[in-house]
Amino acid sequence: MPIRVVHIGTGNVGRLALAGLIEDPRFELVGVCVSTKEKIGKDAGELAGLDVTTGIRATDEPAEMLALRPDCAVYCAMGDTRLLEALEDCRRILAAGVDIVGSAPGLLQYPWKVLPDKFFATIEAAAREGDASIFITGIDPGFANDLIPLAFAGTCRDIEQVRCSEIADYATYDGATVMFDVMGFGKPLDEVPMLLQPGVLGMAWGTTIRQLEAGLGITVDEITESYEREPAPESFDIAAGHVPEGSVAALRFEIRGMVKGRPVIVIEHTTRLRGDLRPDWPQPAQPGGSYRVEIVGEPSYTVDICPTSRHGDHNHAAIVAAAGRIVNAIPAVVGAPAGIRTALDLPLIAGNVVAE
Image (tube, rainbow, N blue to C red; front, side, top):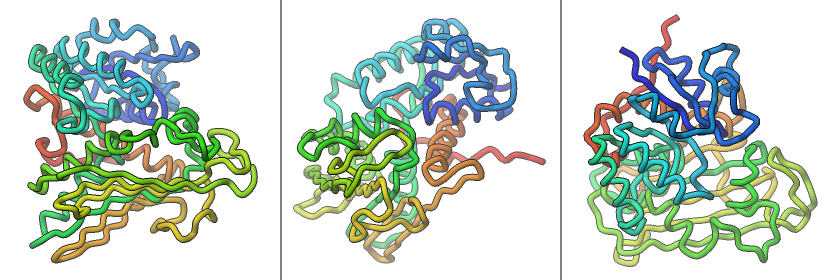
């Protein structure tokens, strides 16, 4: 019997996850919730960019989703700029006895020792009350820096450092809120955006640091962070909007899990809006962008992950991957014990093979 699913949020990740739900026979889509007025009343197939009519019309009323009594909710609403609201959304869904798999709020990927207990204790209580589970994932933070490094670490006799990197050109990433408001691209260098406020990098990717800490069985003493930025040599346009001359056009940051004064777990991002900026910074393994896992130990590894897509570039492929991880995890999460679930306690999740 197909798993009854409702879908919440149809942005970059949500739209692709919705397409996956519609096309996958393991699931029965029973409802769609949106936050944009122009999307209300549209068919789920149209919102997913598919040439199909599902008969499921979008609403902006979350309560209507719970009234449908689904088995699971795919939650892809914005979490970066509305953390408290997203947490409350998840609390209500779990308390109603509905499992959640989604992309937000990202801090629930592994909140222990990252968020103050008061922020996620209500989530855990609601999960117990509703006998429901929640799994938040993606690609980074997500499988590129929790599942993959731990899989290779499991072959090492000893480990000195695990470094996970995203190296990407974001010029084609069409997400103005994330690009400009959160990351600060196109802004003056003397303006500090949300992501670079003191402690935010360590919190956002602290979920990965703490999850790898738990998976590796070590104790991280502190999490440190640093960043550097590069201005645009002249004005130019990207998919998300305009980048004025002298504004931020490249960003590199590190979050380090320190063990006895040594960086044992490192998360690194190198993000450009043009490929010619800062050639001295790390370069991707394929044109446009890639992910990299480096393990220094015995043996040592360098693993380059190069997502590609039949329907778009590296940025599109990465979003497809995040959506795929979400959709494919639904059966495991529905069958999991109540509570916040992570990549450490879910079984190996495989994709859905399409028979021709």
